[in-house]
Image (cartoon, rainbow, N blue to C red; front, side, top):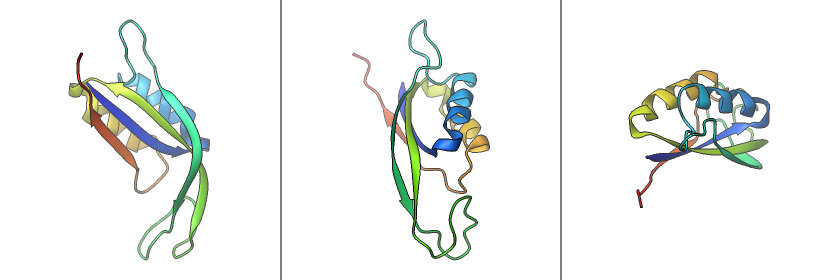
Length: 103
């Protein structure tokens, strides 16, 4: 099992959670669409050549974002991440994938 953590602007958090569940992420036992979210501020500065969804090249930006974390079977990671990238508005999607121990 893996744990995937994704950061998305609040405006797209429901859409991202939906695609996670539809592709098999967030399944725990007999439950599906499981995730945990916290809100915070994402900060970034688009550099030359970037095509930002929010903000302007060369200008520091702060956006209210949601951190969404969920578990995922190893064999579904690539499929789930690919699906997230199709609906996520950012040019560069910030996400982490962690190994989980089975105890």
